[in-house]
Length: 348
Image (cartoon, rainbow, N blue to C red; front, side, top):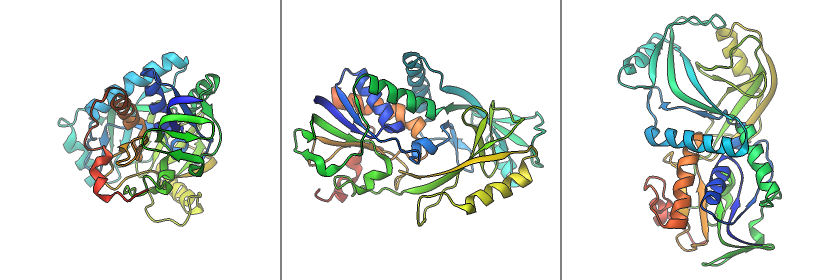
């Protein structure tokens, strides 16, 4: 098989990148094994234009979110599937100070507003703020549908990728019976073990979430206090997530389950039933910006990775940008181009 690009990984990064390359008329093949514990399959799918305790507009929100809406809407039409839902976040203030900090942003951040309606299903004493302009991506539906489309087109190899089976030169690569002009790694945390990109300063972190049934809770909003409660699949909700920078393993823990139970005991009035508990390792980076570009010595090897917790918002915009860079020679945003770390590069 001869292709232009061999893509390793079909999480949100690999999905968006493979889609954009096909839009450019490229011949591709994708290698992926379904890993239910991958970051993309454990994430809530939230796109939030507001970030941090000071509730400021997230980096490049004015460019990222409109692009995401356009591309996801286009994919919905092509896949005959609905997976994009506009939502708002109801921000339950945990203290008077948190309420004051939120209210200071009203009028200065167009996404931040007062919320005056009652929420009978919750206990709270410091009021609620509302963050508009959010989107919720049903990642389970999107990733599954795109996998099915790739399979039907004969473009998906469902097998573990072993770099030992990959012969790389400066002009092309071969992998088993595949010859490609370039191989692009979109494989999340696995990139830290890649000899071509392990010099990049990833800062992996672990996240845990619980899936629960909460009868009587409206799926029209996301509810946030110290944790977030977001609509998941069918009649269930995603509750999370943790952010751990030091951890011994990537499995779920009873400590997080107990944390969720303790938080809900004081916050949620409605009965709930925990269904399952998930954990994953996020491919975050030292400067919280993606890693995108070609290897400084091997132009046949590239990376599209490091989205951290923001893969749903960063993925569409930068997948299109990288695809255009590869096919048309247009530039890559300096903040995400791996050339910013070329001085750290060690020979592969």
